[in-house]
Length: 339
Image 1 (cartoon, one colour):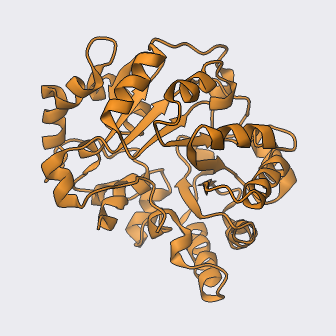
Image 2 (spheres, rainbow, N blue to C red):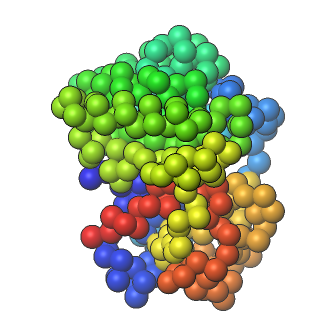
């Protein structure tokens, strides 16, 4: 099974040992895409408030399973390659990207710098539609050529397609899954559209979306393992869930505990702020989720500090705050798959 979060331990071990196993880093805000549901392209410059060498040295000491770099678009950050070079192969990396830099020399450099997983954002398997949605000419062509190159070179890189589901592309999901399965990718990570009410699905569209996925499974083109965490019912399972999804509320009322603060952190390079996961930074009034700042104390001290510890206790064994709002469904449900 492909998980969003790589884990070393069982759920009991996580609670007892409280290890930083997965680190998310927001490298920059700028992006060279102009997606229909995002405004990152409006950012004019990247800012950094963190000493990169110090960051890498601390992460090497922590020794997480994986460090994920995301943006914006990471490849347009001037200091992106410095991060990888400073690590010198001492960390396992994953990259979240729009795929615009998926050319052989870049792929070779990523592999040489110990990049183990690529999360590539794709809105449609139809070239013209995806390129229009992303606002980058020929981007899907570049992605497909890059995937083929990785497989041809037999590189040990896991390829995951991030797919934001909207009312513009939900009806394509059967062909979308078949298309990328034929390219030998490892998994699809389904994400419901957020912060764009004009693109929300209605109940009928949700049912049609699930029906096409189930038909694809029934027809034998894919199995449940083709989805990250084996989870594709991102809009819920009941009519009540569907009504909530129509207004952008995705099953959050059913999440009553969270283990993420026991094994993940998120670092914002623009500020040095440390958050408990990769979704809390995007909340309104996100200062309430700042666990500390790595420019003021070490990452390990923030992790062991009173603020973080109090937050953990508010999330498990019973969630006592509304942190779950706007949560990524694969954060909300992946703890079901701890082994």
